[in-house]
Length: 150
Image (cartoon, rainbow, N blue to C red; front, side, top):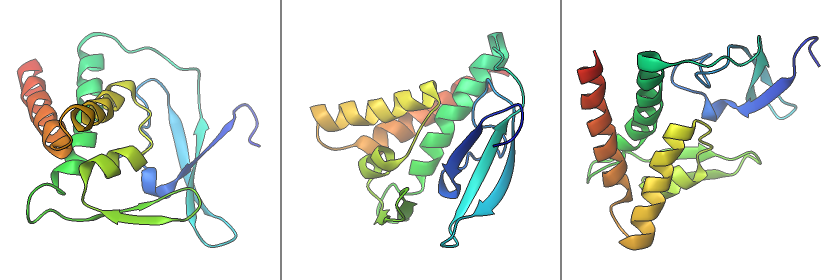
């Protein structure tokens, strides 16, 4: 246990697209280690108390988090959509290009990005199809909103 902080364990497969930026409200350092079976893990150590961001910076951060989820699904959409390989905590592997399955298996912690997961679940519950499409469309709308923010 490191002095002055608690250790957070996350699978390497769930790393954020911007290393070291798991959440907009906490600064962390990362190091890569391997368990006894050779599986990689990322160790995050909190560096300071959580801070609060406000205004335009908070809006841009929230848009970035939601767009990250959307971009993950974008490449799995359509007839030439690519499959995603998801590894769970026990080492179980799931290979799929179904957006609902991908979002269900992801561990999304950012609250705004979590809204896109809930959007997908609502679409699946009400219509039963189009889960990937609504998330990609919402990501596109957020991308345009980000351009308007400057």
